Image 1 (cartoon, rainbow, N blue to C red):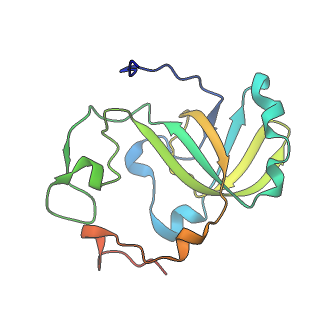
Image 2 (cartoon, rainbow, N blue to C red):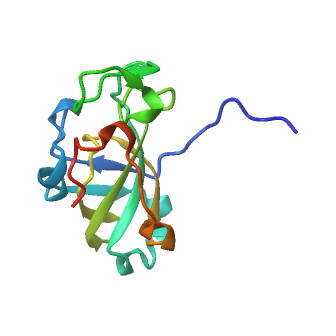
Length: 152
């Protein structure tokens, strides 16, 4: 079996966000209350059937303005360099963004959401409903972020 080293993705839509630059995106409560829109392209509209029944969605998007990839990153909450895969830094080999958002409203091919950390015009790759699972009740370790963020 041959493993693919490259893949092709198709955008299913585009983000309309108040944030024009990556450094404008807030964190925490401010982000959770910020509203954005996701425009789904007409050929994918049928895929939105029943999505309004979910309160939260995962949005997978392409960070089209991300800096070049680097395997070490200095996170906002730390003064030490960390391995890229232990951070949420945007400069990745594949600049994919993943956000858990609250769905506010669906109007035809427009999803109104809160909590999306994508900047304006980011291509949307996929949408999946958030479904809580029993694993979430297990103890979660957050590595070097322990004591640096409040999860409550």
